Each structure stands twice: as structure tokens, then as C-alpha cells.
Image (cartoon, rainbow, N blue to C red; front, side):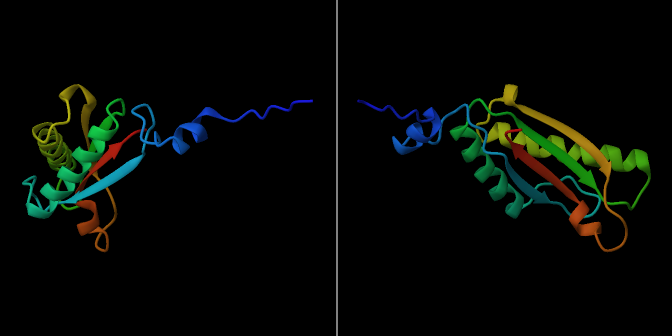
Length: 131
């Protein structure tokens, strides 16, 4: 009498060395820090974006979302404008680094965090690959 064992296809693909399939979502986050009241990318941020672009290339069907944020210093309209500028700067660099523009979306979140402890942590843009 023969017995068959039903195995999920995903573990078999992983065993076959195909774990990095384009339809799988890595759910990776990369954070870029900015100077106060600035959307200018600096060297540390550029290297983070380059790493994210390489991962995005490994997952060509995964969306790439950039969320910009500002600290709570300044007016609400200024913080929304700044967070949008940060998200746009990072998205543009991702596209320059080879991520197709059709996969990249950017949004500004405005001010996040509360003063004064999290001001530096709020001056960011976050790249999310996957959902």
C-alpha cells in the first residue's frame, strides 16, 4: 500500500533554491534621516536608498512605498510640505537607482512624534518594499 505525502509548494520551492521569487513580498523597511527643515539627501541616506533599490530589484512585483515625515516643529502646512518633499526626494532617488517609477509611490505624513524626545526620529522618510 502506497502513501502519498502532500507538501506545500512553497517549501519545495525554497528547498529547490527558489525562495526569492518575484511574487513574494519581503516586507522590508528602510529609514532615511534628514536634517531639521531639510529634504536634502545626504551620504548615509543615499547608501540606504541604494540598498533598498537592490532589494526592490529582487522583488520586481512588490510595490515600493515611501512615507515622509516631519518633526512637530513648525506649522502644519509647512510640515506637510516638508514631509512630501522628503518622500519625493527619496522616491526620485529610488527611480534614479533603477526602481521603475510605476512601482514607486510617495506620500507625506506631516508631523509625527511628540516634542522634544522624538524630534530627530521624526525627521525621516521610510521605504517599504512589499505590503
